Image 1 (cartoon, rainbow, N blue to C red):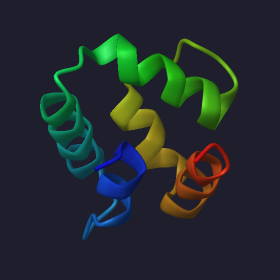
Image 2 (spheres, one colour):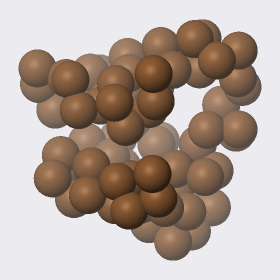
Image 3 (tube, rainbow, N blue to C red):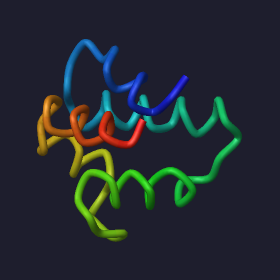
Length: 73
């Protein structure tokens, strides 16, 4: 499973739900936060640093985030 896939299946698009998908992806792949967060920030925002990734993704909106993540898959 990919992070984008986990996000795509969320029933609600909230910071808590996005964070759950983030944590599940990290655990599934045995990754630490920077290994996923930095590339995700680069793809979605074009920068390596943002406030909380889950908070930033939640306010950006499902369609925008999924479309940008799809561009690299």
